[in-house]
Image (cartoon, rainbow, N blue to C red; front, top):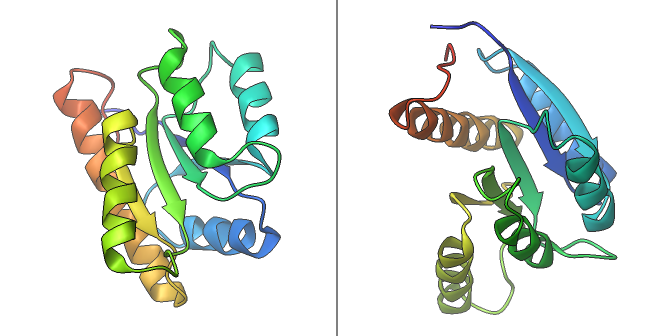
Length: 151
């Protein structure tokens, strides 16, 4: 098993969310290399420029300016070089209702998101949901016969 750090990319337009995500990652018992982009256009440019060194996991905010997370997810799944990228949607909950949110979660899964995380307001909960998502994502990667990571 390798002790290679997980290469994590986080796409979110909110500076506070990027700060707390980074802080949470640093407190987890998982070695990581963390990169952020501020919107969907920057994300797609980053993925294009780094197509030979893609992140292990992309945490993708649903609501971003210029190009939202849903548009990015569709574009990622249509790109042969990016289609196998592990994408975890990361968003504030929908104000409408839980039924609407469940429809959105199902649609994101059908398009190709591996997971959906509702942004918690509490920092300890944030660490926990990020940790659980990484464990789940890396277990899936290991089962597919790809490189193993120390968790």
